[in-house]
Image (cartoon, rainbow, N blue to C red; front, side, top):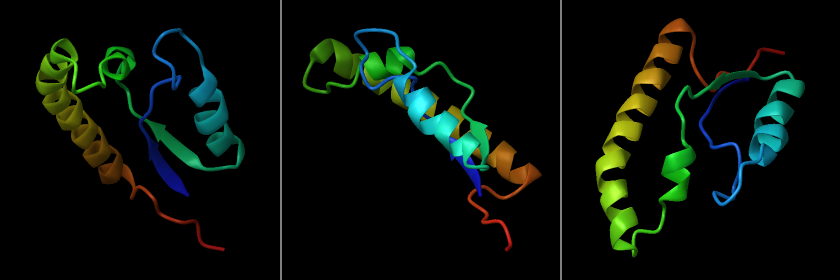
Length: 90
């Protein structure tokens, strides 16, 4: 299966870790999937997710359209090469 993968490396923004990358991305690859990774630094995005916090809300309002536009651009580019989420024929 061809999968577009967009995630930070860790579920915890308070410290750097590769938990999600090792357990999600690496597992998908080791299972034989064709994984296209979102080429974008999501670290700051994942540090600002609390919309009730005025500072974080301000960041979200400015950042979300940028991240969304880049995500859509990269998915479209990947789809031009080959469909994403296409299951392999048995």
